[in-house]
Image (spheres, rainbow, N blue to C red):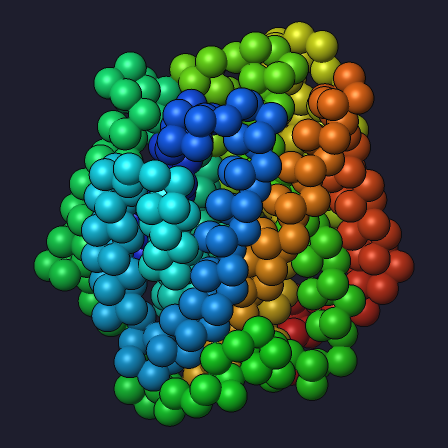
Length: 408
């Protein structure tokens, strides 16, 4: 794919590295947590949920701050600083001697890894409004590719011990920081910069400009519930697959790599054409239906091959994020794209706080009663609720691309 501005592939690489760093450690987390905490797998499931909550709490506060700082100082310095901190933090986690240090590392990673806001702002800076929905799909593609490389590398590196994936993540982040320093141009024009105000650097302030549009509230609510459901993957997959199929770190890594592969194919190859053909609103419906069906069937899967079939079915959920982001990005002007993207990231962090708490507890409680699919049943219910909001309140109320562009 040809990029008109070289900042775009570098920003997408930041998302890629962040995702690799997150995914590369997932296959070894069950073993590492049980070793450091001297606990069994069920207890480790709960600890992993708490750890993800800490990560998400930090991202909740950091997302709007980084987004607003990028509106003030530009995208490049914020992304560069985040990658430097991200790399040093994973080096810290590679050394962590106790669960307490691992919790601290995840907290720092949550703050430093809030790169989706500035990265999305780079795309908004250089992409015409009517093309943003399709272009935001590239962020999802980067996320998908990261989930190919991250878990696969994590599974392979696990043979060198549960610490090796953290060292690799640190090296990749620092390499990306060096690339940004040497080659990344600034995309935010001086005339589009605005002062930094603390009153804007939180989730309510980030979305304040949207509410003048009159139709953002149900869209944001549906997105929040959707994000809650989507947390079933990062918070429970490794533990669910271990309990249900007896998979080891390598098998978990390959399964997550497969998810990343099909998601990247959908995001890079189908998202743009589908959104152009049927529009962002209908693309969201297709994506949510795909996920809801797959989540329900995951709950009753009895063999590993069935899980792979369901992963393929769920791949079209990749339409949801770029469609949602494209709709919202047209509701604010060029001076507040960082603020908006930071708010979207912060709202995702809220779901990342609540989602793991609920979903990991559902998995543990279901397993205790002989059913290891309660996490996916809950996720399917949440998707159904989000889809109902989209069909009832959003589908006929959000302006079409041509109308939104004309009004902007």
